[in-house]
Structure formats: structure tokens, C-alpha cells
Image 1 (tube, rainbow, N blue to C red):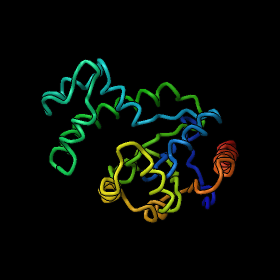
Image 2: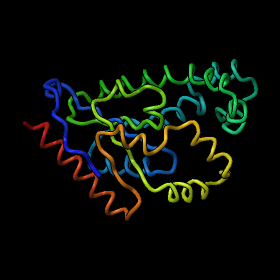
Image 3: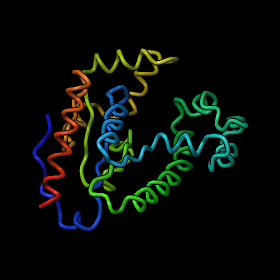
Image 4: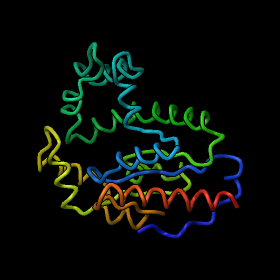
Length: 212
């Protein structure tokens, strides 16, 4: 399912190639990110960075509390309360994004600086297409599985309902559209070994292309 390697521009000799890793909820993106790390590729996890920024002593707590009173405490953001405050409310969601996204962008820039000597780095960004982040990467890797597998995985999560999954799907670009816009697709519907082999093939192809 992986497309042929693209011709890489000369500037990759002077800075890392940045891959954008994305995929809809339940498609296995986190598992693929873990595999990439195990292969020695630095991965910036946007969701994990948000947890740090919103956790105990997080840099965004004061701003979030001011915008959404009663949603933070000693342990950081109360995710259930904050989720309830923005769920189904586009205006509130946009207000939250305007707080979170600039802070994540600053952390991502620091990650790039810290890894500027590497050949390949990865941005793990769930909403890469939806939030216009494609201009920040050199190539896009989409993680994909069958829709029935996605549904089974997501509904097994604590607190997840079919209605909530439908709402999330509505907010995300459809999987087939993501695959159509990807440079490479990593399938996760088979065994973990098959997925790992696909990850290794991609890295081998990229490293070979970057060496020339």
C-alpha cells in the first residue's frame, strides 16, 4: 500500500526530512509511532505535549481556566469537564484550539532544533489534514485499517460510545480521503509483525533515497 518514494529536494542534506504521521481515531497511529521510535526515529507526539501543557503545573492552565472556569485544578485540566465544555460547541472548541495550538507549535519547533542533526524526524499529529498542518512536513504517512476494525478498537475504550465515535468521525477527514492525500500508507489491519515490516520498509526506502 506504500507509494513509491518521492524525489527528495536537496535541502534534506542540511536538515531532517520531516514526516507527518496521521490517521483517524482507532487506526493504530500510536502503535506505528512506537515502532518508529524503536527504529531510532525521533517522534514529536502532539497529543502527549498537550497532556504536559495541561497537566499539573502545565503552562496553559491559567489560560484554560480563564476561558473555561472550573475546568482545572491541582492535577491540571479536568479532561471530563473541559471535554463537556467544548463537545458539540464549535465556538468553544475554537477558543480552546487558539490557546493550545500556538503552544504546541512552539514545542514542536524546539523538538526540531534538538534533532536537527538527524536524517528523519516525525510529527505525530492526529488532525494533520483537518487543521492545515501539511505545510509543516515534507511527506505524509497515513495509518489505516478497515472501518469495522476502527469501530471495534474505539468502542473498546472506556467511556466511548457509538454516538461519540460518530461525532469524532464527523470532525475528522474520512479515511479514504486521507489515504488519497498520503505519500505513504501504513496498513494496521493485519498482524503487528506485518505493520512493523511496513514501517521498516518505509524507513529503508527513505534512508536509501536520502543517502544519494
